Image (cartoon, rainbow, N blue to C red):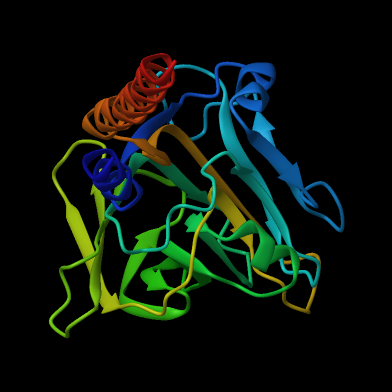
Length: 272
């Protein structure tokens, strides 16, 4: 019995493997079936979510994104199936393609991993790409851990890029800190920009996608942002070894129970 209990305790403390999600937005129905959800993204001059266009120059028509406005209500278009398992103590990774358009925009938004529950309460827990209003025709793009931003990257308007978000949970210089690196590469591969930031505040993330940050101002100051061909860390699942240990533990418990019943029955028959 002690062996079986030990196995079960070990299982409860084992690490969880992470699913790798991919999304190419082949259709609105397929994206929705995979968990991609619009929230407050078609009001107050917002118009983002699924789009049948190909501004991000992905492998085929169909992408996420659209018009972003400077506005108070929060809105997002994101995969909400990540679960509540990503607490930044594990590594997170995302790649894909994105495009910035119309430098008339005057606001800020976020793309990457975030906590949808905090977002809907007008709080912001996020890790990934922080986009600020353009200056002199250049979009200002930064790696960010909940507003703790890295080096600013200046991106020319109407530019499609490959991106990579890499969160190393143990990569920070200080004990307990992680390291976030954002890499943007031109489609021809000739230019690469990097922005890095370190930190950790114990937040959790349970969604991946585009998050418009609440802000007052002129609703007419809009911009366009599109993304496609995504690959990103998804929901945690028990590793195969953990599943095997769980099965062995249960079998051990059942075996102990059967042996105990046999012993009791033998004793009863012997006394008679």
